[in-house]
Length: 316
Image (cartoon, rainbow, N blue to C red):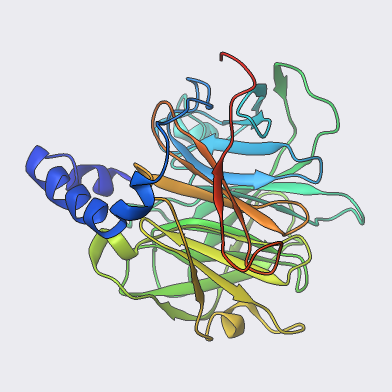
């Protein structure tokens, strides 16, 4: 969550009004659930992005305030590894500014999987560029490990933007960033095959309008399925789903009316990701004692999208 969002809901009255409104809207769904189950380690109290590997490992990260690192957990929330990388030395001891999303997909070496971490938050609208880090997906893990990274610095063609959504398009081989807070958000892209420390200006592919007002409609996360055929976007209150036709651009797909999927209201849900087979998706919230939610997609076993909570494997 960005600084502005925290400020907007920081006062007790504003927080009560905002979340009372959300709970009234989603109370029937939320009330049907059992008490929260702690499945996320204490180190991960600000989860803002999620990528699920082909081995069903969850790569997650904290947002602003953390250092240049991300984490691997299993589907039950058990911490497997903390991965450290060399960030931007100009960012003092943090190495990053505001990491807001993480994605996975192809990269420079054929048939090799890569992880992309988006240091793309810009609440003040004053960053000269944002940065996306690329890592070869590890095959072995230790509790604490260093990982080699490459970085690309990205500029917007129409001035600074705040964004929390980074996706990888495996069909057209593009990085996709969607801005966060406008009434109609922008869809931006650049090629996956950048060189380390390149500074590139992204292309604006198009725009997207979603219903809602204020914080409730901010686009805070998204993912593209491993085959590139499904797209999912998340706001604080809704999850939207599209199916892609052929090799059309992401912006072309997002021009169509989305399917609104059921979503259990989370305290500050800012992470969403497809399973490797594209049949389910997962959501995780910021905050302590966070819960991993798993949902079936409409074209799987049931026409109804059914959520379930992932139980912990043991005390963390």
